[in-house]
Length: 476
Image (cartoon, rainbow, N blue to C red; front, side, top):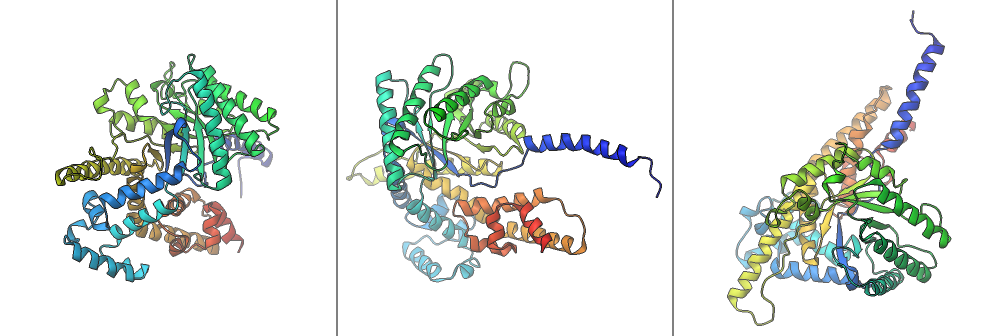
């Protein structure tokens, strides 16, 4: 066969392209298969205790059982699929519940009530076992500006409580601290608080951090703020004989300048690069961002179009980088206006209506985030946790059957390609489908066994990489 290009010319041509391709792949390695928490709960540092997240779970469960004592009530409040056909009388609801309880999971899936029943029971189980996935000990908005002596003392106390929680096994699987921003007015305070907190913690734990510990830097607008935090990390690591790169960080997207800088560019990627590999996530700050856009307080909600714009700009800027993205918080708390044990019928009804209205708001906001590819968000109060999980479980369970079919088909196509020798390199699509199941399993929406319906083995699922799955099957 006659060719126009010599082997030497072709080698030089492809080597040049290879260098550029490899550089691109380093910048955009793709989505991380690591577990991502479905939320981050924020709590003032002055209130943090070693068992804070445990108590939050107890409060969240009580809130759910008070205002939705059964799955039918929740389904009607949120209008889950099939809610119109559910019984109204308490005796009928009890009878249906017992019937579903007695069924195997496979049989329940054939019933029209399966989705509502499953969502409710998974929420209860989650609140009983791991109500809070991620927690931030907050020295910023949740703490406020206080005298230096008070913040110093709080930093010491919070570190001691975290060390106790590590010892007792009562902290969330993901945890961290949010310091004050590195603006000109607050940079010294942010540095001091982090130094005190980490130094105290390392003294207590002999240089160990909790698993998945992260430092959140808020109100980032320029790369130099991130560079400063990295330099601070290096000093703290060296002073405490810790390995380089031990400390990790997150940035926040809560000012217009982090979406568009003074030269008309999106600076987010440069800000991430400034972290030298230490930044693992970018969190959206709903209320600071809407305020920076001139939105008045009444309309500062997660559903405002300016938030969607910021989300999409962030996803475009950081797509394929492996940086986890998180949406912001709903500021409507599902807490009734009346307190006490001797409330009137009217007061109880007002409480119930208020909580249900707040539930619908929180649920709608979380579903909006999930549909738009934001799989994490903020919660500010334990009473918000039931709706975080209601939306998350409904999102995954309502799409489960379709996702099983798609991934199973994709795996079978891969097997056929392997057998016939065809090139099958569209692993990104397969990874996207696999990620659906990984996220669903991580939050408790489905079990690993339920993911086996895709045709994958448990070892393949646990590999968390569709590319490795294909490689393994090709070798066989």
